Amino acid sequence: MRPSLEAVGRFDPERARNRFLETYDSRDTRVVWSGEDLIGFYVVRDRSDHLYLDHIYIRPDHQGGGLGRRIVRSVQDRAREAGLPLRLMALRDSPANAFYISLGFGLESSDALDNYYTWNPD
Image (cartoon, rainbow, N blue to C red; front, side):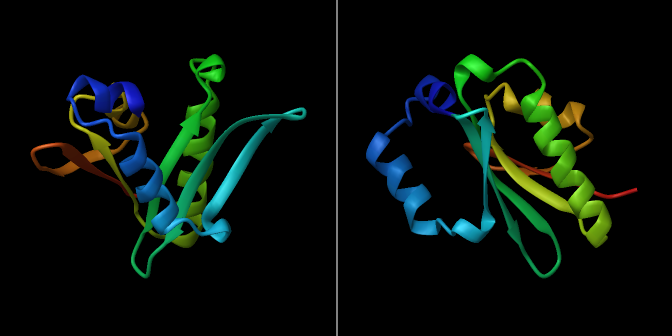
């Protein structure tokens, strides 16, 4: 996310750190390992009427190999089992938008900085 925030002149490391820490809940966080190497994590929050994919971070040297797609598909499976939509937000100018659209997410709304997406189970 840092490159996307830098591209729009909005990256502030302290703000990003605080935003994450203010909402951190270990029960919502899944860590991704490759052997003994920490290569990423993602955060899924349970809401009464949907699941919310709040964060997905993969180390740059592990991006592009399908890991993000596998993670999102596993969260979609979880949403399908629960019979709930899956929602998320992406920066408007981020390459993540095309990624989420390719996984079946539909654009629900936008504001000056962000796009809001929903995926509904079959």
